[in-house]
Structure formats: C-alpha cells, structure tokens
Length: 131
Image 1 (cartoon, rainbow, N blue to C red):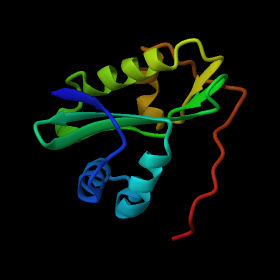
Image 2 (cartoon, rainbow, N blue to C red):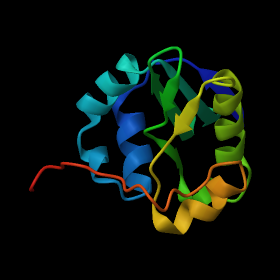
Image 3 (cartoon, helix red, strand yellow):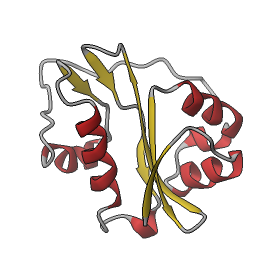
C-alpha cells in the first residue's frame, strides 16, 4: 500500500471507493472530484492502481481543520490503512486549535484511540438533500 498526497482523481475511482462503503455521495462522482480539488489537503491510499482509502481536510489555515471524509474499502479495513491516513493528516495539522470530524456512532472508538473526544454537550448538525 502506498500513501499519496494530491487532488487528482478519476471519477470512477472515487465512485467505486465511496460506493464500496455504501455512502450515497458515491453517486455524485463529478461533485466528489470537485470537492477533492477544493480541499486544502487530500491523502489517499493505493494498492497498485486501486484507490483503497482517502481522507481530506478543509481549514482556515490557522485555527480549525475539519476532516469531512475518511473512508477505506471494506476489504482493506482493519489493516492499518485508515490509521495511517488519519495519523498523517493529524501530523499535517498539528498545532491547530481544533481538529474536528463527524463520524458514525460505530466508529467513535476508532477515533478515540487517536485522541479525539466525543463531545456530549454538542451535536452534529446537517442539511441534506431530501431524495
């Protein structure tokens, strides 16, 4: 497995990765490609020419970094891919006042192992498409 930094992706690679974890956004590959290009930092994991994982960050370049996506193909989960991506991203944004993300409840433990805390006095809020 090889970690790469960069924002150039084929739409098909993004579509396959996102749909592999059953994220609806995988059906919007054109938008995902634009989102990666608009991110401040994108790290990806590759097995040869196969995109197997990725993480991205958007930030104000000083105080706050938000990690919208961290995903790993199911057949590569539990092999350190997500951990490697997350640790590298945390290193890049070391020193920021707040590094934050939103995760599914069944992933909380993974992030807690890497220093994140669950904020009981705050809630994630979102407006999503109705369809």
